[in-house]
Amino acid sequence: MTFKHDDLLAKLAEVAELAGRPSRYVIAYSGGLDSTVMLHALVASRDVHQTRLTAVHIDHALHDDSAAWSQHCKAIADSLDVELVELKVHVDVDSGEGTEGAARRARYDAFRSYVRAGDWLLSAHHKDDQAETLLLNLMRGSGPAGLAGIGEIRPLAGGWLVRPLLSVARSQLQDYAAKHELNWIDDPSNEDRQYDRNYLRHEVLPRLQSRWPDVASRLKRSAVLAGEASLLLDQLADADFRTLGGRADRLALKRLQELPPARQRNVLRYVVRELGLPSPPATTLQSLITELIPARDDAQPIVTWPGAEIRRYRDNVYVLAASTTAESDAVRPITFGTATKSVALAPGLGDLDLEPGAPSGLADAVVTRGLELRYRSGGEEIKPLGQLHTRKLKKLLQEEGVVPWMRDKLPLVYSEGKLVAVADLWIAAGAASEPGTAIRWRNRPSLH
Image (cartoon, rainbow, N blue to C red; front, side, top):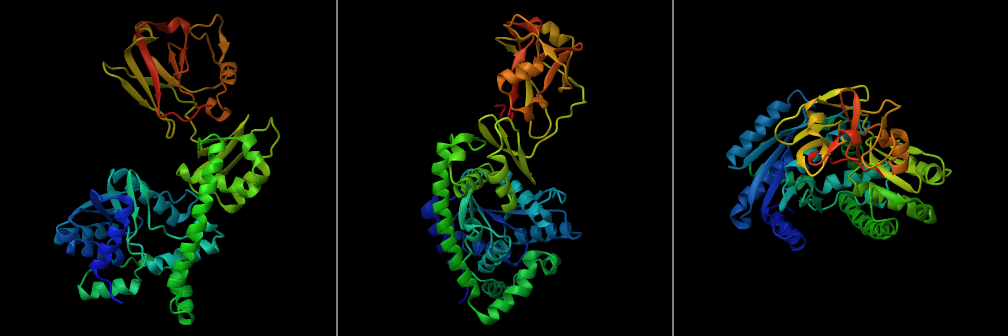
């Protein structure tokens, strides 16, 4: 069986029945065989689909030839009269996810930042990729979601991530490329057997194919069945999620404890995915069930894995991105202009805005004397506006119910060595006025 651009158009039309017509096809263009074939097929049929094409090349800067690969992609896109956008990313090889996992995360973060509402990001994963992914996830001990392999369509940044070649074999793409005399990049790292996927591709799948020539199709059928099971589990998880409060980053502890362990694991996997966090390993998930959820009432347990953590406090379980440490020893002057001034806090902690002319806030005299940004070091006191006495900040935070892991990350505003504001929670009585300069904490993590 040969692959033709008509096959691609038929699959895209099928997807459009679910997702509606796209405003733009954004091709994830690595320069390799698969994405080169997909790009060529879309260009060859542009008079039929009449959809704007843009190719996006991600430079991971992990190989000495990455700059040359970018130039190759630019030359091919120019020859096909297609706009090419190059996005350079930083891959955190020390993240604990492994080089492949960290590169994938960086790549999709870049795609999310680029894709707009109505776009379809087209990825050229094919049938052999699906077989490799299913086997790889099987070796990792994955559940139904992992064994479902690569999904054909899912939401992405207001648009859709679509993989229209999952029914096409690599050999069919090779035949298409040869017929049309296409040029593509052969990444030498694809031959390195130290990577699990490459080992499966070069050592395992050929042996399976020698016994079962249609192994990729068989694995694809298994992936479809696992996908159906995964969908049912997601529906159950969504129902449980709503009984737990309907808020992904905070789950009601007592109701979670009432669920059987299998449903606890299922709903925790669900909310982690909903928050866009890395999936917890099976051993970590088991620690959540056996150690964190049943811990004594006065405990504050935490379970972590690369990129995420789950904590327990009072009557809730909190699902969070990995903690960011505030620069507790830093004293940063806050410069103030005529317009709203935004001060970037530590990564993940948002921004602190100073808004002059608000109905209430810091007095002009306080602002004029100069402001500094600090974090807790212990022993801070403040007399909040509307209260009669000076209070220990520690006690105020306890009464307010601020979760313990956020208390040392609250931005504190000082003037001439005196604490005049605690984030956007309290302003010191002696530093306030109406009107005044309000303090707004934008994009702040949950405090309660």
